[in-house]
Length: 414
Image (tube, rainbow, N blue to C red):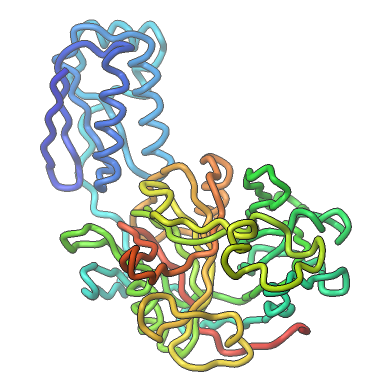
């Protein structure tokens, strides 16, 4: 099979020659996914050179048509060969897949878009709610984690509706007794939540709000933010590495917020995540000694020595600061190699899905991600500063960040 492509404005003209059968379908699928990852969301597929097409090829065409239309892109077939036209007519797919070439249409964008370059990346900044801010609550006492001293009196049941986002240690449960052996890392964004149980299953679970159903989590400790985001920021790495470090991204988000502390939600293509996840629940029994010191730490904590979930789509929830801001201090650590910025971020990794270009709605983006893609894992993001490993932290290729200045910080008991 021969595949060539040429860009015409915002449309990518892709020409294919050969057979589109079970053998070549995977090759075409891989090629098309790379084009979409590269930003091609309006594709005109020229199949004049296809001599034969099987059901495997038909399924592939329908798959990409649905995928691109779901993000307001387009996928149409031009100049189909006679074998292709005959098969599509017989399947009743001609009306859906065959079309004249779509005219290049500039994406509708708000007038107030700023562009900046920083840290080897390009940023598009949109003010979605000027002057909006977030209230932030610190829940529980994270210091109890060092001795695994959490008991029933330290657990509280919290709901996470659309106007909130959060992260911490918790479990899907209605009681401490039910959750006691399963507490693990969680994050919640826009009415959806994910967490990683520590009961040995090692399979992440999730809940999406629907009707009167709202995600409810038994929480040992965490951070919960409520309010509105002031900015939507699109970014894409333009450096030679093709990836932007989390610390550089967080620093830019803080500058955009104009605040000493900000809440950040991000959906981005991952170049690799660095982080840790609990192996055991910290609420089962007093550990005695230091469970998070070597060598006991290997029984309690799973830490990624290499970047994980590269080429996945990652959802991040967290807060960051560039100055002291109690009572958040006990929850925040340096995001990168420098003392500032500091932050606390959890990430959920999903199978890849392209993001709609331009302005996008947070609720719809997150709900669609949970409902259509495979949840692969949940991590507490960390920076690996060991000399033997070199400096490693999570990196991202492109994505969208929702940012809100934090103007009020409270504590819900320790």
